[in-house]
Image (cartoon, rainbow, N blue to C red; front, top):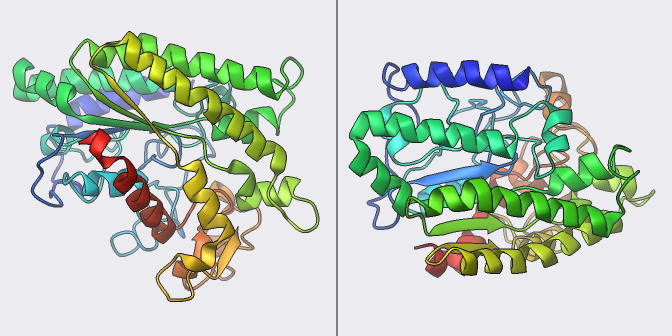
Length: 370
């Protein structure tokens, strides 16, 4: 059912990209001296609205999401404002907002400087996207292949190949596999312990990079593929509530699983860089940056006091609400000043926290990306 819906939406995109008016992403942020475009794959950290028209409960194209985005526009970003894919597009000098590929309002100029294919609640494990009824990693690549056909029709094969070859690609996945598929359902735990499940995730990730992402892009000249580590998922508010005991501490088992996965992902990406000569797979550690923000939130933020709240979200009670549970009915309970909070809902960061993460990560790895 999800695959059929994606195909139907994709056909609309092919036509509408040449028909609709100018979108919010068309204006460039600064004069670009870096890559011609940015493409984002993965989960909700980078999703800018691809789940909006899917038959899934895991979407957020309604208030209070987006209340600080362009005057209060819910676009499907799992945040009160911009997300890391937006900030990275701006830091690369491309544009202030990275639009979702399935946004029906796209124009050709939007496509030429990059779009996002990420889908909230997806993962490396194919079971994760099936449970959530969202866009799997292989289907995100299928959408990217359609994208290439669209820009080839718009600007010609030579220019399209140049864009694909010289652009930056960013992705993150895995936390939904650990937090949702493994620890919250019995389907995988019956057959795998944590070490063997992280091995399974690495196998799926490696297959994805090698057979679809890596070789497909490598064959067209791509050299910059940034892969973000799994974050300390055990410290998000929902995991604190569900698995942190009465004191709502970080879930150690979730964080240990994330660290184990990361310890296997980094050398795998080094191996891929050797197997694909000239490619640049960049492992970007966000685990430690985020852990420091979570544990020492008062030294971050907009005020001299930093963030005031680091263990619950702004929306509703902040302990469990996310996606459809964070809705208009929660407005009265939702915080008035989200700049004081690390988390927007029980899973996702506020715009300000994402901006800090994006700036610190970009500054650390920019020499490998540009």
